[in-house]
Image (tube, rainbow, N blue to C red):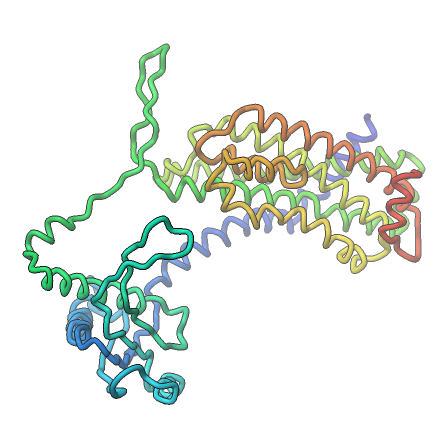
Length: 452
């Protein structure tokens, strides 16, 4: 045990006492905060060149209203309130006549050429029966549902520029509603009162402490915090797993290629060497975790974002540390086995691809899991051992809370998987560390794991 501790301390110091570690420790939060600040500062830095839009209004009802709304916007809503500078483009709405009936493909192609040439930003075609509503029976629906008989089509190359489409959606529907109200002879003032918006405010559950009688909760719930806090916690674990486990490949490969491992194995057993390396990387990952967690909590309190600090912070930290240690041991053992079986870094990268699929798998399913953390789907995914550390922690950080037996079961499964990975990695490490020349194949790894 003393030799394992000596190796672990040496690996920890070798990883922490470097400029690269310090730079990485500081650079990660700086890059993340810088990206958020940069996105906020550049939010209004848009192309303010005029957007010319041709409108073919087959209904004869919307063009004048859209042109009037665009002129009002160009006069009042595209300038910064403080500096008076223009921060949004002007919308120049002009009418285009494409004859009677549905526009032909030749007419649409001609107008689209104007869009391609930069003369127009977009072409808008409005159906003639845009004001009418009819009941349509769709397959699978129990009854016919009301649906607008016509549509408004936009032809543009700037599909990512959704500001104009959003503005057109609002103004066209406002105008159509007014036309429908007028046709029904409904008074506008009464309609405005009836359509007054009622805000829906999500609140935290109210709880009363039976011992002290203290009331907690009932305050406004921040939806952004409910989604982003679990996501950032999962991303932090993902980052620490990569930082804590990935260097093991380079460490093992370096010692193998420079024949250092042969000298070390004269004093320690292969399992002691592997165990020391794993414990050293666990220590480094805990250092990173402590710095980021303490810094994140203090930064949130200092900036006045207490709502982003989970109410169950102590419980969350406990499960985070437990799953973090198991994850680093599990994936670190696999990385060590790969490093011992390969002869160069390029070969190890190709063998790591299947392993990284398991590491990044939670990134593909985190959104449905966080939407329904108590669902059977989320439970099943979080009990797959390679994904359990990140997904189970994601469910613990989300609301509503999950039963205690689920993270306990997840811990048991991950612990078994970790013990299996360490055992198999030890057998591969013992054989592969002294192998020189040609790298091993997956079939060789299986043979070494089975035969030892």
